[in-house]
Length: 233
Image (cartoon, rainbow, N blue to C red; front, side):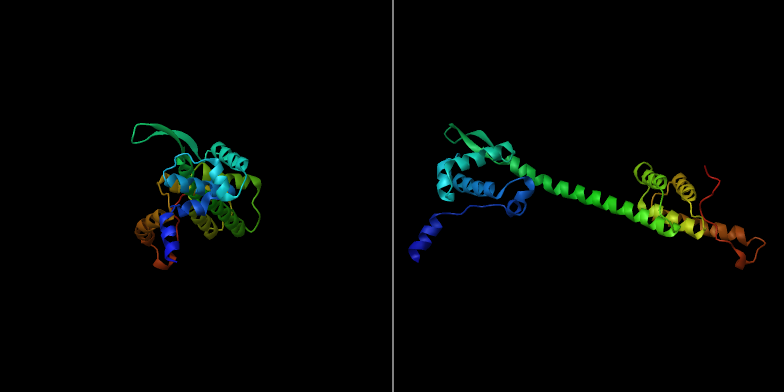
């Protein structure tokens, strides 16, 4: 046992990033290529800059031509390159360079975030469509769906703002995209871009509306006037 432990320690260790083991398929690396990579790293960590394909084939129990083919595939797939390095003695030697692989791994997080944002945008759009159809009590026409898409893509109205405009339209029993559009335009003119800003503006104007309505009228007859005006262009 002591003799085994000596050999075990002398064999050393190869450090491999868990992130690579978790995501190697996502950067286009096959399982066989990963095995070749691990053998390359093992020998390079021992100071062998350009391990021979034959030694890798022996350890993996493969034919040498298979290893050559996998090395070629990894270079073609931009998972690695062969570059020249200068050692401490000033001598140049070729070595395998895996910076391209690291670069691909670093892009995964960006792609994941972009995918999540895209999915969130798609979900928001579907939610807006479904809510309007539910409140209107009918399916939206292709033209209406295009109009809503323009609100989101061209006018950059937030889904929460469109949903709030829908609520105002329903409260007024005006089941029309034109009515909603006038509300959204009114808020845009006031530079109200979020539901919270609309609510604050509504609260700010409430005392003024109440004071104006109280002149010569019983308080019980004060109408609930929305903050938008249908005469706005």
